[in-house]
Image (cartoon, rainbow, N blue to C red; front, side, top):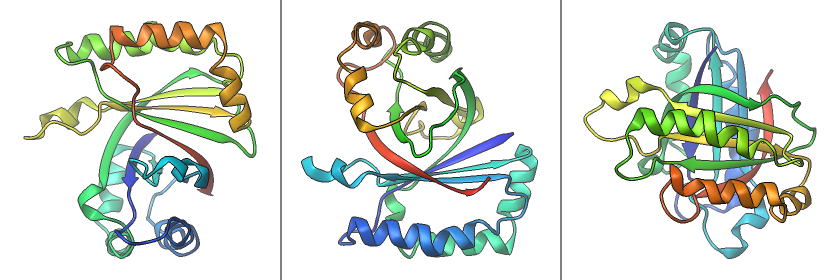
Amino acid sequence: MFKIVTLYKRKPGMEVEAFQSRWLDKHSLIASRTPGLRRYVQSHALPQGYKKGELIYDGISEMWFDSEQACKDAFATDAYAKVLQDAASFTDQSKTVVMTVDVHVIKDGSIPMPAVKNIEFVNQRPGMDLQAFRRYWKEVHGPIASKIDVLQRYEQNHLRLQEYDAPTRPVFDGLAITWFHSTADMKKGATTEAYAITRADEPHFLPDGHLPIIVATEHVIVR
């Protein structure tokens, strides 16, 4: 399956609740008509996440197609042109980021319903070779992080290598997506030895400091 992710920020001055309602209630109907779309998920940032200020993104859209060509064919249709036109009416286009990704399932657990979804926006450590970064993230760090017991599922979405052929460097090198039963479980996991070991490993391949994240709830529009 070919996956494409879109990162969204709402238009300036728009309330979070209005953005989420507009995205879920109207836009989802338009987007779900995209030809060849096999799966479509919206992940909305939890309202409590805004208590400390604005988030880097208000949510992400995930779309799956049978192949890259199927995605290209779909995006060339009038139906998808309507998706873009509608998105422009309620999102800040200057902050929209589109990523094609390769998905690596690190912990193959089922997604709880309902679930809390943690989305981390990942960049490689400055000066690190790209291939070394990708290999370390998947083969070394992934198994370490997967030992956090309350973590139900863990996927790494690596930006496809073709994206690096663009004239400008991509905004992110990937997304780390994890699912939990609840925010309480997330907080519990952060107190464990496995979490401490995971955090201690991050300087080997990530920039210093915490990665930007959003904690979200997901809405499966097309299964």
